[in-house]
Structure formats: C-alpha cells, structure tokens
Length: 227
Image 1 (cartoon, helix red, strand yellow):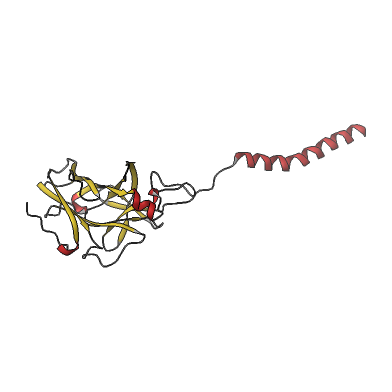
Image 2 (cartoon, one colour):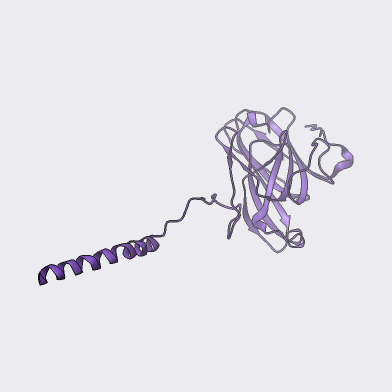
C-alpha cells in the first residue's frame, strides 16, 4: 500500500509502518515492533471494512507543519499517526481508539515532571487533552495508554490542568475536569470535588449543643422534687 504523508519530509525525524487487515466489527491492533518511535501500538474498533491497511507513525523534529499552534505544557514529542488512505482512522470510522506510548524517564526527571502529569493531546481544530493512564515502566521508560476518538497529529506533553477529553460511545467526546491536588493524578478515575462527610465532627457538635440542655433538665427535675 502506498501511503503518502501530508507532513513535510524535512520535519520527520523517524517513522515506522505496520500493516493489518481492518474488518468492520472486529477490533484491530497495529504494533510497531521495530521500536524506533515513542508509539508502541494503536488499537481501535472499526465500524467499516477497509481490508489491508497500513498505519504509519511519524515522530517529528518539531510541531507538525499541519498544525498552526502549540499545545499547553512542556512537549516531549510531536507525532503523526495516519491509518490508511481511505479514512480508516477518522472518528466516523471507529467506535473507540487507543494509543500506547513510552516516555524516557530522563526527560521526566530533567523537566521535574511527575509521570502522573504526562498526557497525550490530539489536534482537531484545537489541542484536545486525552484521557491518559500509566500502564507500566522499566529501567528506561514509563509506558502510557490514551483513549482517542481518531488518529491525526498528536503531542505527548506535561498536563497543565485543562479539560481532558474522554471518548464515550461511538467516537463521541465527553469532558471531565481533572484534579491534581494532593495525591491526585491523571491515572484512574476522576476525583470527586464533593465535601467529605465527617461523622465524628458532627457527633461532637451534637454533644456540645445537647449537654447544656441535658444539665438544665436535670437541674429542673431536682428543683421540682425539692418543691
């Protein structure tokens, strides 16, 4: 398959291809076994049949020439992911999509960034932070997995606290606000901002209010007996 990228060749640092048969209703996974880019694999549930399809990952030298603005946060890598040449990777063609990637531990350390603040962003008229979770680590890398509504231009960045896009249903996106307070991270479920109930505190307040009334009642009973 002759898959032609729209990215300027001078901006591509390295690339890798993977070919699979894409059949509607059957989840498909593209693995990049040469391990030359920061993307390790992608997978999605296709709505349509495209048969033999080649996916190309392009790790870029700078921001994609197809993207007019930079994302928020410190950038680790800019990446393009193109799935076939017939729209197999578009939001209209998939039900859910995932990108798995790796980040060097030295970059995380040198930039003083917690691995809980690493996130994948996708460009679609604007940069959309995607729901990202840590999946593991080894001596040199930390591994992550992000949910995406489609494939195009991406950036692996530091999370800066903006709204995170989560895929829901057939390519639809819902917005959630991530809290990165004490012990907070992008990994796992969103922390609720509701007030924490304190049953012991409520009990103390009740005792403080009821004790004087109880003492008054005892005094009244003693006085009544004397009368």
